[in-house]
Image (cartoon, rainbow, N blue to C red):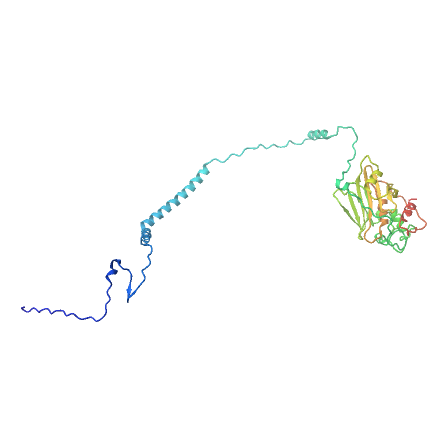
Length: 375
């Protein structure tokens, strides 16, 4: 009417495309099964609901993200630190204010001054009240050494070679600086072995004593005080601290032992010999009177000797080496002739000239020489 355009009716066009519409049964989870092209999918597996737990964790995280909460936590930590520091310094101040423990006072006792009167009083107290004579103390041997068994060389052993037959073996000639091819090295009419036996120098004009020759030295036992000559080239060894056993050793392995023992005061030397000298015969002993007038007993082959002084017994024993011979029998004789149980003022007597040196072919021929030299 009056100029208005008349609405044209909307023409419906036909759509040729195939549209797929969601089935009504799917709405409201009535049928959760999917249908595609006529195929039916398997129903989805049921799982536990986690929505609630995730929601709670998220709330906690959101809570801590707020600044005010962070400030509160920092404030609490700061307060705790301040409290700990304050407690430490208060405790230190309290300990410093406490009084220190009082140490007990120990009165120092000073020793009384030593006066002459005090020394005299002590000497009077220590003085023996008995009127019996004072005897020298006897050195007590340790039980182990007292009970040890002595070892003795076998009897009738042959001397080592002696070319000039002068009662000194060739090895002994080296010790005394004598000529092994001459029976009287210094030409004074006394053959070399005789001079050594009589304690004179075989390499010097008589009357030069052996101790003054520089060829031998005198050993003084520090405990028992006995004295004896020994070759200067030999070694001396004290086995124990009391020098109860002393060894005089040569380079060949031969050595001479001197041991000191204490016998019972009730027993005789014969009783002691039968108890200590195992395997030895008392009938094999001869009386020995040496150059210093010391009396003792010696075995016939001169390889063992005994000296007795009171309850003290001194034993000299020759121990051969591994050669099978006895190279230093005459040195053993020299030590027997020079042995003294204590210091003495006795002088060595003059030598007695013998007409000719004896024959020492027999093993114990030195015994004959000993008897002749003492004439």
